[in-house]
Image (cartoon, rainbow, N blue to C red; front, side, top):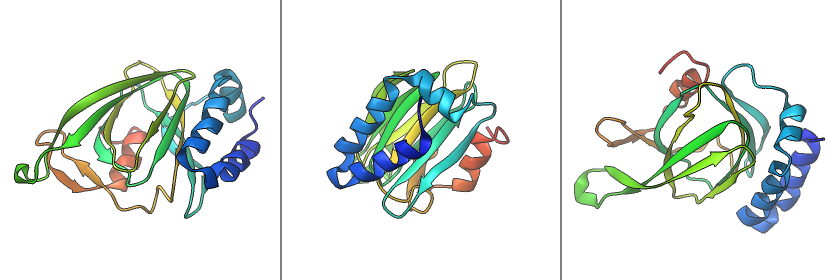
Length: 178
């Protein structure tokens, strides 16, 4: 059975080894996604649920609304994602040359299904889609304080950079803004 406190302690213990060591902890947990689901409980509503937060490490139970789409954004922190229920499709973006005024273009994609993990570098820009008609649950681990880190998002129409709006994102996860 997945034990949330043991998982947190394992991530904290792995932190000196960097992102790769933390990814190994997440991948080990995702070998039994049903146990993670049982340990965290069946998702009943979308949200960003902090499991652990410090200046060096944040662990979040991310519950994506059905068919939810979140605009391109960066974290300015490395991240490790492990999906324990459902699906999370990540579109990867790259910055265009400076003369493009902060715009981005598509650079790839990675679909994650139940049990999959993905490591993202601190400089990665991505957007995320839950393409299925039910909630998706994933553990996201960040190499810093996810909720306090300044970062950017990109307008979905113009693909121009602007400051990240955490309050808007929290409303989106709660299903109050689309």
